[in-house]
Image 1 (tube, rainbow, N blue to C red):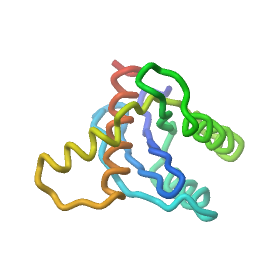
Image 2 (cartoon, rainbow, N blue to C red):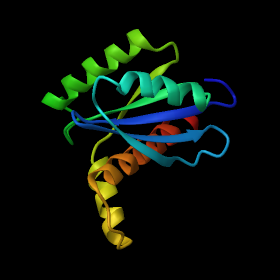
Image 3 (cartoon, rainbow, N blue to C red):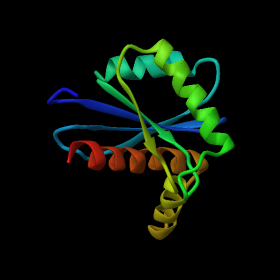
Image 4 (cartoon, helix red, strand yellow):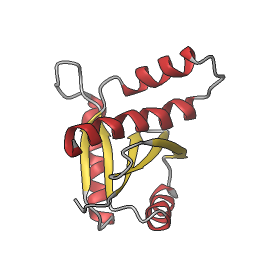
Length: 137
């Protein structure tokens, strides 16, 4: 990883994909948006990567609490492999255990009205925060 890296994180779901960004200097992830997981997703992702000079992509990998694979784990690994064939930047997998639960709990705690899209983007934020703590600190 470069000394000044820009990270984009994906919380991948079959319908929606939450996105969060951070850089290696501030190390403060922030949710940016949620995209539909459809035919246009890859082109939109490429645009976001280019526009924000993203150097590394992080993909949340769902696992059981005992670290075993789930059906969703297998599906996300296939998605990850498609991304690796389509993108030229490094792509990292990060365990996303309970990130959506954490996100929903956080949104409830602050009393904010939220949508599923908000949970997805905030979950991506938590996944990216874990990646930064595990890889950069």
